[in-house]
Image (cartoon, rainbow, N blue to C red):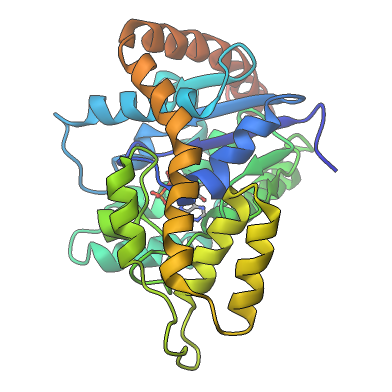
Length: 330
Ligand code: ADP
């Protein structure tokens, strides 16, 4: 059943262009959920600075992500859209939650282990504490549901642990938020289908929401498939592409036909790949057109983000005040 009258929180990092994994794993649901629920959607800039970044480029990245949110259909009249660092209660609550978060829980987080591996020799404490800040982001708004991709479910689980720890130490206060799962919880890389589609793998692994049609055609043409058979335990690139076609196309007969072919091990990639590319282009065209319109009105986007900050702060301040009172912080 589609949720109604719930509080929703989610966020993305301004680390580069949004890709189809972000869209299908999370943001597509954000748009649907805002119809009958109170939604908070943040741009989590404090998370993005836990990995190397360029300060000169950063304001543009934040603006790009705001444009993406709005172009995808996040409606600032219905949802609260804001920048995390504009609401200082996020870092304040994060500090408080740090004091009740077991170190061992942070050290076993898959994302920390992956990113620490990539940054060997220069692992900053922010990378370890990332899930505590994420717990603060979420708990400030006391949401029922958190629509995120599968890669973030471990962090939402830890948020629930932290909420329980707070409740048992200082009295029942936080409700435990649940993950709201997407139809495709994990979109895989085009070139290494064993890994999730991610900006950090490089542009040819991803389909960016902003890719022009000719780039999409080229990337799909080069995408790895399982033509010639799939070695045991290898993740199927062909299946990943088929899943994309299934969620993005509205042509049921063609979907069924490709699925039948795939099941029989006879998917004709020479026909399938161009059909997939055109389907993706058709889905992205209106989003790209809206984005171009909005990009011409940066003051309007800034006005939306500042309005969102004011609305978010009202809720965040109340939660932080309640937390401090319960903890004896006067
Ligand atoms: P990234 O992982 O690309 O840096 P973010 O951390 O900003 O992106 O994540 C934004 C949202 O997109 C999160 O809810 C995350 O779970 C989701 N997401 C990211 N990559 C994928 C993927 N390949 N498949 C499905 N969902 C994804």
